[in-house]
Length: 369
Image (tube, rainbow, N blue to C red):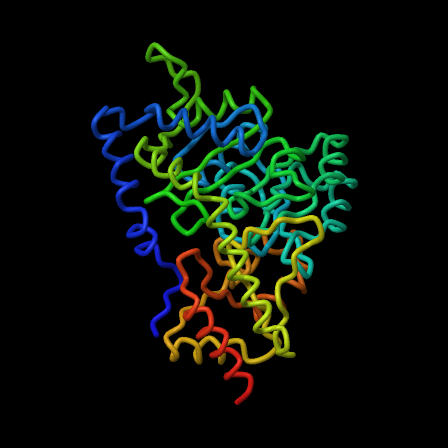
């Protein structure tokens, strides 16, 4: 077999007619930027996250940068963020003029709440980006309550958890602003790039609207120096279409995850991902911890025609682009251990049952050698 890590081609073949229909509609009306599809998507996302305002932008990274600026980040402000995430979770801080303060993670790959709470209580940071990693949400209720007391802003990086909930609540309730990404790798992805900022704060939303198009306030007047970060109408149309299938696709991801969990549960060398109580995990990624010979397993699976990936190594505080910040919060032993163990398996709705079985059988055969 040849099992790719992602198969967007399969998704396209299944929904080709619907995709072409909605994109053709955009080309027919000609409003390729800020068309009716963009407004419809913003309304849909507001409803999905149960928040008042939504503004789409060109990428999830832009969403984070603009949110930091809208929250009032000052030059040199210290912003806490996990060291186990995609580079954009921290590069946005540098782009906005801040300093990333990297934090260790727990056994569920999420930011250590005790370390974060200590930083907030001591007023050692000016803001926090809470990353919901791999599709599972971190606990933010008490964090946000304490942060409000200390006038520390909280931004949720919800790029990987569209459809996920904690205690039945989606991202956004316990933060000042929430950011999502529509990168093609996400549960709901564009055919290109895209992102959105969702909030209950009108002032933040108004700033985002200005930032995304050069600070424009109408009548060719530009109040601030902004950016050009508009979500194309055709991408909005595709995302809107895909959102109709989100529940179906998420249930399929959960089914695949359950197949992996069941098949691999008896292998002592593997630590399986855990679903936190009262969480709905969308399994954006299915990440195993391999206690020994992780790299050997990856090579073995590759030779079997199975693609895997590592999310994320090196960790952020070990990346060259953040080298000048690594000593600000340098004690990150759990992250440094995890990045030697983690490996992601293919997981997408179009994965076939025989492929899932082949992946599981191949992993079992590796450890039974």
